[in-house]
Structure formats: structure tokens, C-alpha cells
Length: 270
Figure 1 (cartoon, rainbow, N blue to C red):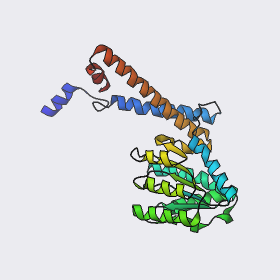
Figure 2 (cartoon, rainbow, N blue to C red):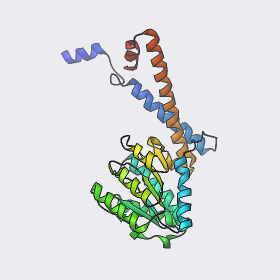
Figure 3 (cartoon, one colour):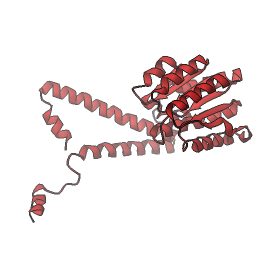
Figure 4 (cartoon, one colour):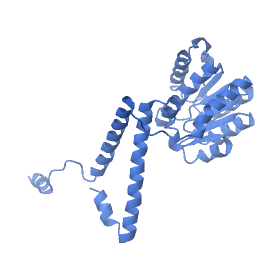
């Protein structure tokens, strides 16, 4: 009885205390994504994704490998299934399709055993879509080792034996990032790196020709495919980020002028 009385005194909450703004944020994202997708479906203009040099350079890297008659090495990173791996596999689909069209050998190395069959199927399907299924070589899709530096050593060996003209390290990377990028540079590769690990991204910046930083990796699928619906989703997320950034600036100004941020904190804690 006492508990019921206490609940009645406190009132009925539609949202858990402190979650109102979380709901508004998520609802705004859903609305923006829905609006942008609908605009894309009916052919209305939507903002374009800015030029990303690292993604533009993929065609350059594949073209160089084709001219030199050398293979391209691609790795989707060290993580398991997650946002980085999904993004890396989406880029792999584009790279495999372009390699099939250019008749360029593509070597894909994977660290996780459960990633290997997925990567193999993606490459196989890309060759099929390019109209060259007979060019697909399953032996070039290689599961190497689940041990971090055993994988690293094996890929370094591939660089020395196969002499690829391009090295694409797209995904999530850890301590092996500098080792692999240095090995690729010594092999004479044009290198494109992508990483969301802030503790390792600088190694790619100093060793790779092009580097995708952070969320540029997640925009890659929409950027490369030019799919209006995917682009609309990315644009909607960026619009919400801009709005949140503006609120942060406005809140900072208000707190600075008033000299007290507690009222603002209380308002945002609803």
C-alpha cells in the first residue's frame, strides 16, 4: 500500500526519468531518415556526400594494379561481425566488382574463420554481377590465422611473394596497423587505410597514401554505390549531428553568459 501511495504521489511517467531527450533524439533520427529515404524514392534532390579522397582513390589503386599486371590485396580488418566489419565488407563488394571488370587479381585475407565464408561469397557474387564468374578464384580468398600477429606475419609474407600493386586495409585495426602498412610501403604498394580506432589511426596517416578517418568508413557504402536511399540515410545522420553540435555551442554560450550551467543540465535531464 505504501509503495502504491508513493507511486501515486510521484505521478505517472510516460518515459523513465531522464530519458525524455533520448527519446526526442532517437525519434528525430527516425523522422529524418524516413524523410530522406522518401525524397530519394520519388527522385527529389537530397544533399550529396562531400568528396572523400580515400574512396575516390580506390579506382586509381585498382587501375594502377591493372596497368602493372599485379594483384590487389584487401583486408576487412581484425574485428568480428560489427559496424566496422559490415562497412569493410560493403567496400569489398565494390572492390571485387571493379577487379572483375578490370580483370585484376584480387587477394583477400581474413583473420576470423567465420568472416572467411562471408567474404568469399561477397567476392563470388561481385564477380557474377560483373559478368565474369569464371574469373573468381576461391584460393585467393584466404583465411590466414585468428592470432593477431600470426595473421600479420602471414600477410607480410604475401606482400613479399605476390608483390601486390595496391594494399587496401579497410576496417578496424589495432597494434598490427603500423606493421602491415610499413610492409605494404616496402613492397611498393599504393595504400588506402581506414580505421575507427583512434589509438592507431595516426599510423595509417603517416604510412598510407590515403586514409579514411573514423566515420568516413561508415559512409563508404553509400558513397561508392551512389544509391540515393543509402545516401539519404547518411545525410539524415549528419543533419542530426549538426543539430546536436549547434545545441552544444548554444548551451556553452548560455552557461558562460549566465555563469551557471545547472539550470541547463536540469533541463536536459528531463
